[in-house]
Image (cartoon, rainbow, N blue to C red):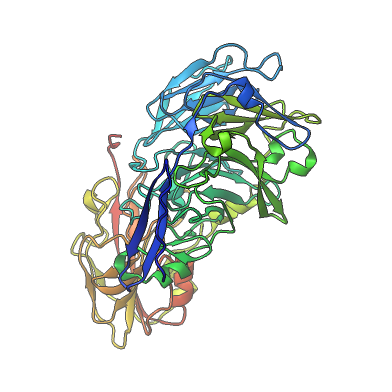
Amino acid sequence: MKRVTAAVVIGMATGAACAQQGDGTRFSAPSNVFKPAKVEATPERMRGIKAPPGFTVTPFATGLKNARIITVAPNGDIYVSRRDQGDVLLLKDANGDGKADGAPVEVANRAGAHGMAIKDNKFYLVTVKELFVADIKPDGRLGELKLLVGDLPDSGQHPNRTIAFGPDGMLYLTVGSTCNTCNESNPENATILRVSPDGQQRSIFASGLRNTIGFDWHPQTGELWSFDHGIDFLGDDQQQEEINKIEMGKMYGWPHVYGGGDIYPQSTPVGEIKKEEWKARSTPMVLGYTAHAAPMQMVFGHRGGFPAEYSGDAFVTMRGSWNRVQASGYEIVRVRFAGGRPTAVEPFVTGFLTDGGKTHIARPVGLAWAKDGSLLMADDGNGVIYRIAHGDGKPGNLSAMAPSGPMRDQANKGNGVPLANKRPETQSTGTLSVSSPSFKAGGAMDQKYSEYADGVSPALAWKPVPNAKSYAIIMEDPDAKPVTPFVHWLAWNIPANVTSLPEGLQEQPRLTDPEGVLQGRNTRGSMGYFGPKPPVGDKPHHYHFQVYALDTMLDVPFGADRDQLLQALQGHVIGKGEVMGTYAQKQKPQK
C-alpha cells in the first residue's frame, strides 16, 4: 500500500500514524491535531446559530460552566450534571417564558457526576465507578444519595457513563473503553450494561462499543439504537462515527474491527483468534457519520413538541473534533428513520463553529426534551443551555415510552428452561464420570471460586469416553432468579486427549492451553467462567458442572450462547455426567 505522508499545516500538530500487524500489512495515515479555540458566546455570535425554517434557538440559561448531561422530570424540572464541578444543578421555568427562573440550585455533589435518569420519583446518578439513587422532593431537590453500585470498571480514556431506563423498566448504563484500541482486561469495559433498578443484578447487554454516550429506543419498534465514537488516528475521514442497532449478546467489532467490517491493522485478538474470525463474529454499523464528530446525548422525537414529521427521527449532539484538519461536529444532527431504520444523518442546528471553523462558541453535549416540547442542549464549553423551539410546537410527552416487547423478549431468551443435561439436545445413553479436586461432590465450594472473591474456575476431571472426539462443559445454577438457570460457563472443543482442566482458566474467548478450546457467553454477558454470586443471605445455590463427550469437534464460533451450543451438541453426545457444588454468601461484601 502506498504510504501517505502527513501534510504540515500551520497551527496544527501533524504526523504520520503507522501500524504493523503480524501478517506484514502496513497502514499509514496522516494524524492531525486541531481543536478550534473557544471564544465567548456573545449575543452577536449567537445570532449566527442556524436551524431549519420555523425553528428558533435562544439561550435558556447561561454561566453554567461544564454543563454536560440533561434530564427532565415529568413535572418539567430540569437537571444538569457538571462533570468538572462534580455536581447536579436544578433549573425551572415556572412562568413558561423559555428561560430559567433565576440562578440554578445545586442538588447533588459527587465527583465525576455525569449520567442521570428519573423513574418513579427517584433520581439516578452515575459517576465513573458508582451508581446512586435519591428520592425527589416536592420542590425538586434531592434526598440523600444512596449507593446502589460501587464497582463499575475503572475508566481510563472514556470516563463518561450515561444511563437511561428502557421500556422494560431496566436501567441501561454505558461504559466506555479505557483506551483508543486495546484488549480490555475487564469485560465490562466498552459495553452497555443492563442493571436492575435496585442495582443488585447487572449483565453485559452488548460489547465491542468503544465509547457509546448517546442511545435511545425507537418509538415504534422498541429497538435500541446508539451512536458510538470511532477510533482515533486513522486519518481525517476514518473511523466514521457509528450508528448501531444494539441487541443483547451482540459484539460490535471494537477494538479489532470497525465500521462496515474494516480491520484495524495494529491490534491482536487474545487467544490467537484471527482478525477474520473476529470480523465474522462482529455486527457492522448500520450507518456512519463524519469521523471525529464525537456523538453525545441522543433522543428520539416522539417525546417532544416538534411537528409530526420529526417524531420518528432521532436528534444527537456532536461535541466536535480535536483531531481533524477541518473540524467536524459542533452541532446537533437529525437522524432520519424510515421503516424503523436510519437512512440519513443531516445537520439540524449549526453555527457553533465560528470564524470559518477556527473558533467555537459551544461544544454540544446534553440533549433533552423540555415539558413545553422544546429541545434543550447543554454546552460544556461556555456553560450555556440552548432552547430549540418550533413556531407550531406543542407540549411534549415526557412519559411516552417505546414498546417493551423487543427488550423483554431478548432478556427472557433461555429463561425458565431445564438444566442442559435434562434437555433433549443432550440426550445420550452413555455416561461420564466427573469429579473436581477443588470441592467434594455435593459439597460447598470455597469462596475463591465465587465472584465475591477471586472468581477463579475450579479444577475439573473426568474419565475418558471411548471414541470421543472432544468434550464440552456447561455450568448452570437452577436456583438463580430472575434468570433460571443462570449460565456460568460454556466451553467446547476440549481435545479428546484432555480429561482434566486446571484451576483458574483464562476468561477469554479462545484458550491456547488447552489449545483451541472455545468459550461462550454466560448470563453475565462475558466469555469464560463467571463464578457463583448468589444474593447475600440466600440458601446455598447448586452449581452443576455438566460435561459432555462428543463424537465430533463443533463448528460453533467463540462467544456463542447456551442455545447455540446446545443446538450444535444435538445428535453428537455419546456420554454425559456432572459434578455439583454449592455456594452461599452470608456476609455482605464491602463496597
